[in-house]
Image (cartoon, rainbow, N blue to C red; front, side):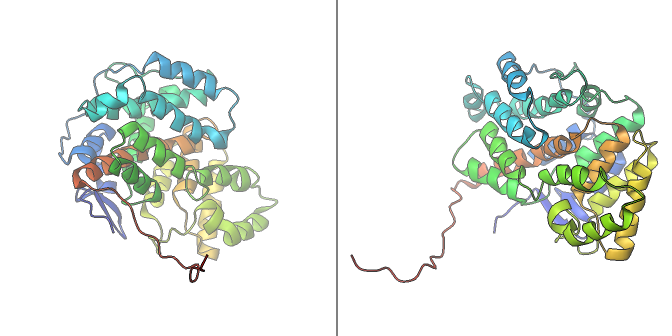
Length: 342
């Protein structure tokens, strides 16, 4: 059991510092303001965009080399390497010494700029002065910069910024408990988040379910979703037996937008039928893929949306763990039988 004052969860979803995440998203609160709330506990709703910070040239160079020809399901590993690179050349030591705020913002804007590697340009996109993170994401992903699209991305980032003690958040806390810098904590969380039960599920949803889906194989894919949905695609989150309210929120956002991908209405119909016939309740991976397709984002962008949003929670948990002043070192219960004599 880990004590926390960051996030708690009930059937309505997560609450950040006792503020309901879905209400923060719906209110129009900026991702930057919610980031400040999660990291500091202070609510400053007027925050809209951060001052300009340059992503260091050495990190952009390393990213450009690493990202060439990388397979989509390995991109989270590349992002972990980039975050570690951000902490090199004295920047990690500076963060531990107190230069924390710039480190937090540097991590977030660098992850947002990586959407450029999914776009036709295939390059990192630096954040502009006074540009909100939602705007940087759309520009980097070469998506249309409408107010509706920016709002949808901002709401998604707010809604998924933290989810209590998820596995990756716990990994971040473990790293923090050994006095690692924030860059190492986020990289550790990224490696855990890369697992098949979380971010890799977005690839499975798109490649194995949504991409091959057609009217001709509709019944077959419904059976497939019912049989493998929970383990492979993220249906039926165990914390939400009546359905994940975050996924429902994101699917509702998609319904309000004119879809760039013409297949989206059929996918939404498929999910409704799966819910009605098989009680297959969609999870975050599914909803993110739908939202990304609706906005016309590059293929496989859904996974980076999840990583970008959740990086805030990983940092918040790392910072909170530092204040608790002890190393997370659980004990194991040995079950291997009695020791033999030598």
